[in-house]
Length: 271
Image (cartoon, rainbow, N blue to C red; front, side):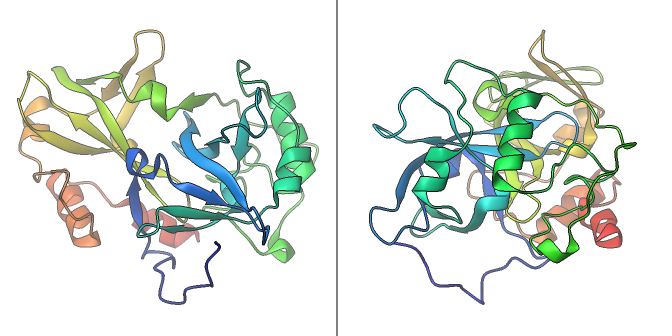
């Protein structure tokens, strides 16, 4: 059952809701259909390795649409309801069924994305200076959409699976600091704001948050995330546990420890 709009939901810029990817796994996906509007459940996400932004939610549709990947752009994700463990999707099941098909064993190619974005008539993200092309956030007002010129070049991107990268090793400037355990995203820009690092044998029983802005690079061949921080600085960072509340105050303290400007400062200027 879909939800009525909630005016109290925190979705204004600078007041976003943060969610862990593994927490969202298994959430039900509700389509616009009044009858039998269940699409399936959240399986994983694809993100790009330039902006660390979710480009597609991958749905597990059970016995519906067998043999193909069902990808849903954040442009079509209306709201997350944590208590009900559901996400409202602004599409009908018929729209999804008739969308460009991608076999389950195929990667997401630029040719597929061109067809996908053309079918749904939404702005592409790979042309323009910001996270979402011409916009730092998802621009839902069609009247504000811009048309790319033919002279503008698309930037090269590669999509990665949150399921795959969640096992990657993490390397500080001076040594190993554990492995990626999870990701924290926001529900407005659909940006991955942090990776959760399980510090393993280096610092047993601990977890730390590292902003994706502090990641130097990722070696996809070595399956390692390289972080532009020292082990000691990471070890002295504000404590993080699975029960920690990811408030803006916590984020300010975390960024203050690293003497880094918060992502919300730059994006407030660009919005």
